Length: 217
Image (cartoon, rainbow, N blue to C red):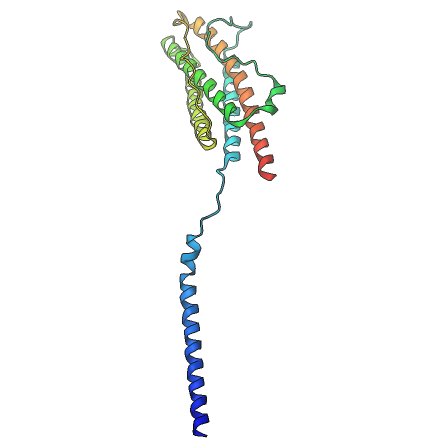
């Protein structure tokens, strides 16, 4: 009887030890769980390329509207002579080509064209200040938006690893001798820039749509 009691006591003590060890081991594992979880790499999330393309389209739309307003305020009865600026980007794009455009080279070319227009508008701003052109305040607003658009576009190019082109510096015409010549120059430049904004806005929208479709697949 004593042997049976002793044996039962021993087994009960052994069960307590095993149970305590299991509980201790479980507690240690639970305590280390946050460390294991944090050690697992977070899933890769693609930068919000789609949102940035939509922002670029909206900013280009705003620039196009300001350009149209300036053209209405200082319009000629006839079209201005198209010969002052020899180094403006050639806006000979076709609508049929837009769906075949690829992201990286397209962004690179738009950036190069935008930088060229930025140089031309800086020239126009200096000429406008000299001759006290009445459109100078709105021209300054437009140049600020161009710089903002350029910065946004460069940020997007970094995200998709698009190359920056290095076109030659544009050659500017001689300073305009009168306010009338400034107005003629501004008309020519604004007309070309409106064409650029029309094209760029459509391109950004199409690239955004194509990227959304690609993300769903």
